Length: 238
Image (tube, rainbow, N blue to C red):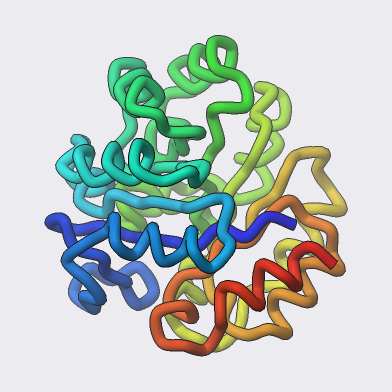
């Protein structure tokens, strides 16, 4: 299983939200590259970046920070947040990003998603953010009215390689991840699943490794010391 330490960015700072609430934001650092290098030194091979501003305003205000991490570390960088055009996808890939995550655009514009998947293949992942069983968009602020199962079924048909699935109710809450959700998804769909939201203990990591899903994103638990990244990476390779 791949471990993706997470850096969420807002105004050039490393932050975490509580259950996706922009009013519940904690700032951990004003130097995303420094944090990324710490993750790399702890044994990480991958990193999950989110431009929280981009997700809200449909642009790439933190692009230079993403580019800096992609070009100044050996980490495989994936980025999501506000990516709603081919130009933005290409901008990130040309900057050295390993994989681009489509969220709101993937659900609002299936033709755009298909065009990206056809052109870039596995360099495109889709973020499936779940709130009360439905997919949320626009930085988790809008209920799309589409269920998780219906959306993932569509993604499989389109040939999407990887789904990054977040249970918003678990995100940043430090109360464990939704193991039942990831077990069900991995059993039902032949698509790579990355678990996100609430991975907050070694038992969560152990259970996800045993499930044999593709990856897990760890955020707040790294910042408050509940999980040591070096140990989590070692566990993921067992």
